[in-house]
Image 1 (cartoon, one colour):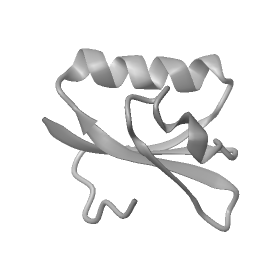
Image 2 (cartoon, one colour):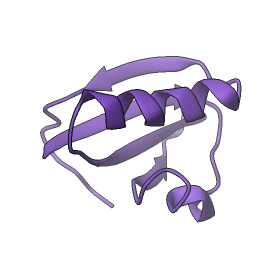
Image 3 (tube, one colour):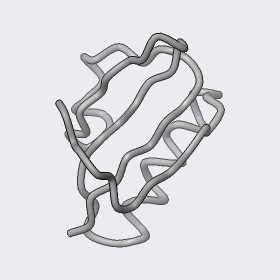
Image 4 (cartoon, helix red, strand yellow):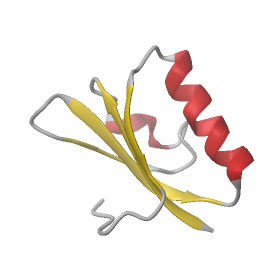
Length: 71
């Protein structure tokens, strides 16, 4: 398992956590959503990124070794 932190522009409702494979969803003051969770492999990560693209959200950053994973 690999820890991942994904930041996108826009607000994703925290209730969508299940749809994003259990990733925790947080928001920052800049109007971005931060998804934090774990993936088994690159295919699973690609699936999460595909879901974000399907929603039309702009990827800001992707960190595969986040320092702190605050839910």
